[in-house]
Amino acid sequence: MKKCFYKKLLKIKYLSIFKQYIELINRWTFFAIIALVSGFTILYVANVVYINKLLKQNQILDKSYSTLKNSNNTLRSRLIELQSPARIIPIAEKQLGMVKTEELATCLKE
Image 1 (cartoon, one colour):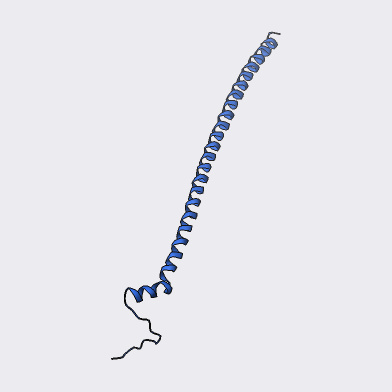
Image 2: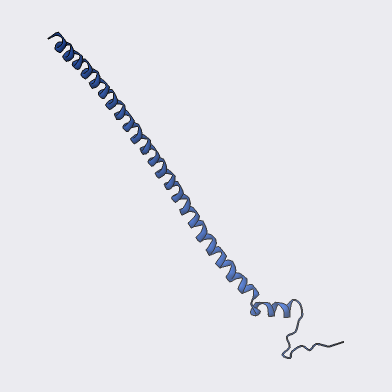
């Protein structure tokens, strides 16, 4: 009877130690899960902030690009206007004293 009693006592003692061990594992597992979730949340929020910053920078660059494109188109039209014969011929005749002839120039060979 004493052996049976000691076996039961030993069984109860091991069972209580096993329960404490399981509680300890459950506690650390819970903390590990909380730490992982917190870490992933921090990484996600940091990624969202970085993406928002990139989108804002992209919008600024798109605005700058459209402004530069409009300026470039304006400068091209001004260049075409300045290179036009309708502008150059009167300047050449009045300021430089050039005369426009209708016949073609001839090349002399030596």
